[in-house]
Picture 1 (cartoon, one colour):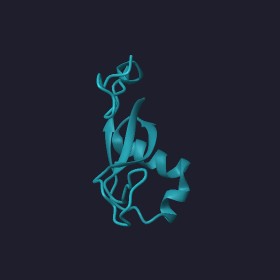
Picture 2 (cartoon, one colour):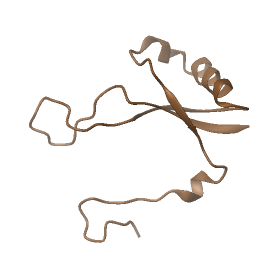
Picture 3 (cartoon, helix red, strand yellow):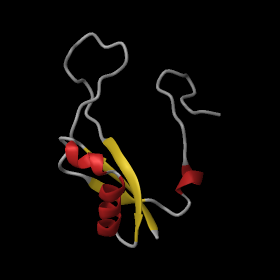
Picture 4 (cartoon, helix red, strand yellow):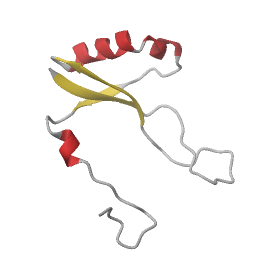
Length: 87
């Protein structure tokens, strides 16, 4: 089976130590991960395993298929360090 990540552009993000009550970053929120033979099957699996999602105000969700070796492709970066890359 293939693995998918489900995301939404709905919602807001606030940066730490903000002063404004207004959201200040356009973002994506991770809704969850699920497996399926295709994206539709994975979507229904996501909903079945996380039925609380039906009670949220999220509506539009999209997904990407994750590469079979996605764990090995993880990388970390920093905005506040001079070298910006985690060693």
